Image (cartoon, rainbow, N blue to C red; front, side):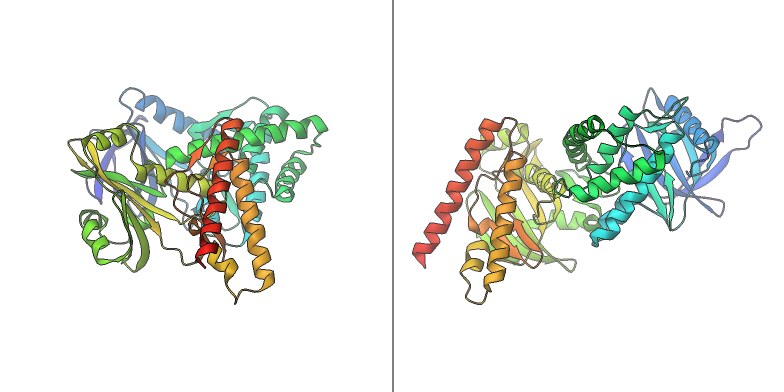
Length: 459
C-alpha cells in the first residue's frame, strides 16, 4: 500500500452520487487478503474507511458490512454512522463510516487501566450493553472487548459484519454462551466478579438463572477461555492495533506496536547484534546470547538464539523458531494472568528462507531471584510468608493450565515489587493430557528443589 497520507477516489454505488475523494492518513488494522481499516479525512470530516481486499468475496463483504450498519441504526443501537460505500479503481470495494472522536476501544482502556475496580466497571458496562443487544435480537459472532468503543460513558458497537440479526430476542442458551465469552476476560479465581458480570446481564433482561443455567455457564466459560487463548495467540502473529508484522528482505517477525513505533525499528533490527555486544551481557553460551540494553529510552533484554548449522536451521524453520515460540508462550501466560517479562518483539533473520538466527525481545524486569529473596536477612517474616504463598499459587496455576516450564529453577522466578515473575520460557509446553502434565510437573518440582538445595550447599 502507498505510504501515508494518500488519496482514494470512491465511486459510490448509489445512483446519481458523485465520486468522493478521501485522504487516508493511517492504518488501524489489517487482515491479510480480507480487509484493511484506515483512519481518513473526507473534506474536513474525520472518517473510518474499510477496504475489502478478498479477491473473490470483497463485494459481498462490503454489502454485508453496509447492511449490518443500517440494521444497527434501525434497532436503535449506538454504532458509527454509515456514510457511503462504493468502489475504487485501485483498492477495490469500500465502506466509509463516521469516526467517533475521543474514543478508545474497551480493550485499549482495559489494557491501560491498572485499577482492577475500574476495569471491572468497564466489564459490567459491556455486560449491560450485551444484554441490550440480545434484547434487540443482535448476536455478536466475534465477541471481544475490542469490538466495543468507549466515548465517555457511551458505548458503541463495532464490527457489525460479524453480527447476526434475529427476528426475536436472543434465547437463553445462546446468551449464556456469549456471557461466558465475556466473563472469560476475568481471572477464573475471581468468582465474585464473574458472578457480578452475570448479575448485571440478567438484571437487564429480567432473568433468573436456574442451577442448570449456572452449570451450563461454568461449562461454557471453560470452553471460552480455551478458545479466547487460541484466537489471542493468532492475533499476536499479525498486524493489528496492538502488534505490527515485520517483513524485510532478510528478516521477519512481530513487534508490539508501541515498541515498533518508538524509534526506527528497522534500524534496530539491522544493528541488533552490535547493540547486544555493546550492552550488559547476561549470558554468552553456544545456544543463546542474552544482553540487557537501553534502546530508545527503554530498558530491554534481548535473547539471541544462535545459528548451529544447516540441519539446526532447517529444524527450526520447520517447527518455528525458539524466539517465535517464546513470543507465543509469553502472550499465553499474560492471558492467564501469570506474570512474565512483557514481550516486545521477536525477529527471525533468514538466509535462503532458512531461520539463521532469531531474537526474543522483552522489557527488562528488576527483581531478586526467589532463593536469594527468601534467604535475605533484610526481608521480614511477613514478606517471606507472602512470597512463599505467591510461589504456591504460581505453581498451582501452572498445574491447572497443564503448563510445564521445562527449566523451573529459582533463578527463573524473580521477586519484584508487583509479585513473582516467571522467566526463561524456552522449555515451556502446554500439555493436552493430564497424565503427561503430571509427569512434567513432577520433573519441574524436582528441578526446583534441586536448584534450591544446590544453592543452599553453596551458601
